[in-house]
Length: 277
Image (tube, rainbow, N blue to C red):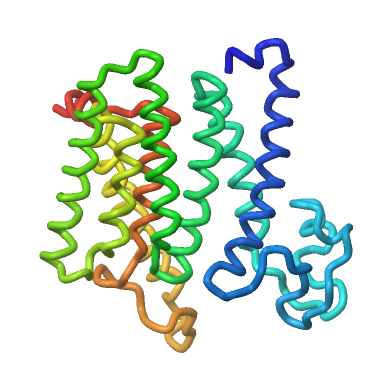
């Protein structure tokens, strides 16, 4: 963030948060219309009654809060996903601005995390990772690596990065084939390549391990929370099937969280394990 040192820190955070929230609002539209054949240029409307939304109903974050999460006309609930995506994108943009080394890194990372938000949400809802989004990440990661080599990044390190990305993908592919697609999807096998390529060979292992650790923790907590919620309510049915250790859980969000922990906090799993007695 050295290139913004002239700005007060509070203003710096506010600018990137607001920018991220605005982009998050666009991502919500893109998510809703992705693979539906609907144009991104169409006017926004209520998903329940179809009423066109006024300009003051489209202000990111504020409109949702002012309307208390309900449509102004039909009073139906607006999915919480909308405000969560806007808030998450705003926070990610602030985090990216804090860790980016230069302007080009900043622009690439802003694009990268925006695509990752779409992938995570889409995978949660549909258990599918769109190939075109993974392709966009791959192009972004490769062009950034080429830029780094132009400014002095060792060519040998670049090939180490490529090898680490392919090895990470090969590892996930082995899990995919062994489990016949029940543990992870083939989309995860492809997604890990641009993620590992971006973080580099020194952090690719930590990223994958963190993804599995986070996934295991979230899975266990979800099952325990569900069991506790169900206690004393034998007739209540919140989900189409009971949560168990065999329940399908999208893995892309955990891969993305593993990537973000390495990106923002520089976590090194091998160093962490060295402290274990």
